[in-house]
Image 1: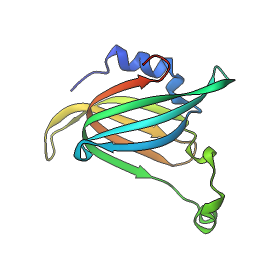
Image 2: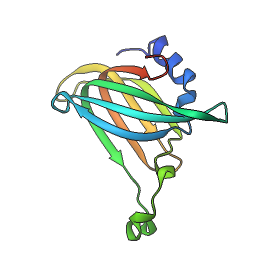
Image 3: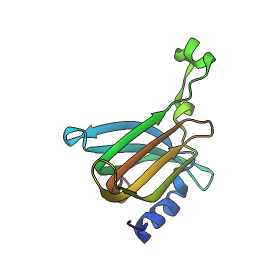
Image 4: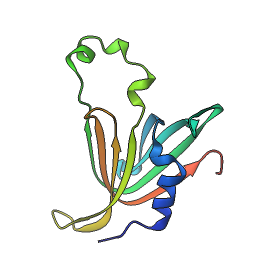
Length: 135
């Protein structure tokens, strides 16, 4: 099983585990084996930035993708009332992951968590970051 490289730990620390970032778009790539997860970071140390920046987690060697939206009866009745706050992420975690089922592989489990039961869980071989501020 892979361990979490220090670069991933540093990544999570650098972006404060993506707390209060807005998940703005998911872009499927390369025949659904890769995925760009684009965040809008509008906060920095609890100060509103004058210019938000885009941060992309590029997932490749994607093995699984699972989303639980946990939509309440009120949301189901009035989906037009949703706004950007619905996509404000509470926490992103990266953990080592190993699978012996179907296709054995060592990689990572990426979890995007919200304050509710909403979550996205992804298993993949590789995770990279692209920041529009640093390139």
